[in-house]
Every structure is written in C-alpha cells, then in structure tokens.
Amino acid sequence: MGMMLETTATRLWPKKGGPHYGSPDKDPAVRLRVIEDAGRSTVPFTTGVPFGIGENYAERIEAMFALRASARRQGHIQEVIVQNFRAKAATAMRLVGDLETQQYVATVAVTRLVLGPKLRVQAPPNLTDAAELSLLIRAGIDDWGGVSPLTPDRVNPERPWPQIEELARLTADAEFILPERLTAHPHYARAEQPWIDPRVLPHVRALAAEDGLAIEGRRPVGLPWQEPDPEWASSGRVNLHTEIDTVGRDSDRRSDFDDVYGDWAELRAQVGGDASRDAARPDHRPADPALRRPAPRPRSSTMRFAGCPQRASCLPPPGGRL
Image (cartoon, rainbow, N blue to C red):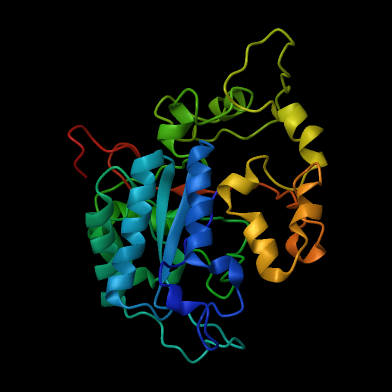
C-alpha cells in the first residue's frame, strides 16, 4: 500500500491560494498519522514527497526527516518517492514554474543522505528528460518505480513512460542493471511474518525469486486460496476472511478509533453535538451525519512493471554501502 506524505509544511494547505487549500486530507498531521498506522499494522508502505509546490529548502528536508523517523520506528517504509512537480494546464497552478533540474537533483542527493543506505529512493523516470536520468542515479536513487508498457501514467498522462528497453540501456550506462521487482520490495517479499499475511505469502512467493525480485518471465496465475482450519492458532493478524468479509462490514472504522484519532466528545462539544446521546451508541459513532465518514471503498490492485537500478539486488550490499 502507499500514500504520499506530500509535505510537512502546514502553511501550504489552510489558506486560500495555497497548493493544498480545500483539501483537508492533505493536513500533514493526518498524513503522518496514516503512515504511522500503516507501520503499526505491519504494512509494507510506499510514500514520498512532491517538490516544487511552494515549499522552501528547510521544509523539503523536514519532510524527509519525518519519513525517516517513522521508518526507524516501524520499519515499514519500503520506498520514498522523490517527485518533481510538473505544472498542468487548466489547474490553479498552471503558471507555477517546474522545479529546475539542478534543484531536483540536489534534493534527491540530500534525500539519500538523510534516509541513509537502507531505504529505497525512487524517482519517476517519465517526469525527467531522458538525457538527465543519469543524474538521478548519480544523486542516489535506486528504484524507478512502476513503469508500464501497457498503461499510461494516470496522474501524468501527458508524459509517457520511457520504453523499458531504453530505460534499461540508460541504467546500464550508469553501470547498474534493471531487474523487475514485485510491488512488495525484496526485503518484505522474502521476510516471514509479520510483513505479509501467511495466507497471502504463498501467492507472493510464487512470483518472487530467492533474492525477492520478480522471477523473470513468470506470468501471474490464480492459486487456490487456503482458508485457515478452525484449530489454527492466531498468527497475530486479523482473520481476513471474517474480519473483512463479515465483521468488517458492520463498522466503518477501526475499533480503537477514539483512542487513536482523538477525543470525539471534545469534538462534539465544539460543533454542538449531544455527547451523551452519541456515547450511548453501541458502535461509538457520532449520530450527527456531519461527523461520520463513509466506509472506505475497496481499491483494486494492479501489478505493473517496476524496476530498480542496482548492481546485485534491491537490498544494500554487505557493509550497508550503496
């Protein structure tokens, strides 16, 4: 799973005219909480920051330190996307200049220094001119992210993906190779619990080689789904077949919502809700429809070609040096 942090600069979203104005879900505190929750739930997570949206130099680094801190606490951040902003026509930021190449490359290099050798640093290859992609490798990236020969970049359809053969050639020119990986990075694909649920793990292992990268030429095929026997002891995770398909549909939020996401009684008092009435509800959800969120819709999952330039594998070589 994944979600961009976007920024830790709180000034960019609450005021009219800011790049994130009118988007309450881009409150940095909310996004950092989601990233932290993913770690507590042992979900291999992808995140990142777009640069050039109005942040200053200090705010760029603060965002990376925030991600580094979460990764050190939870160990779940498998890649950090360092993305350069590209202005789009017919949007409020259409006249904002794109981040200059040298600033972008410098940001990538500082990101590598802040995150260290163990975290993967990714740059989208279609958002940089082909002639300058080698600069990103020299600055410290070790992952190109998803590169699809079949589908466009849904966010930036005006910028086509480079051909895989051409990307492999450019990568080789920088003395790296370009293997395919899974959506779960090698460390998580090879690891035992807790990173991948034991019922999902066989499906991942069917696609992963011993080094955790994708088996070259292997085409995904359906495998039988093994439900746990009743006498199985708990693996430490929720029972997906009951918690998601049955119990999970009875509630629109996690059971410890009140503890994790703040004091709902205080919020109700601020907006004039009846705390005593709401507290009597068995599911602890506020009766005021304005305070309730709809249940999240299930999202489809796709597997795309994803490559990472490296000399042997996506894991750091002995000694932890890149």
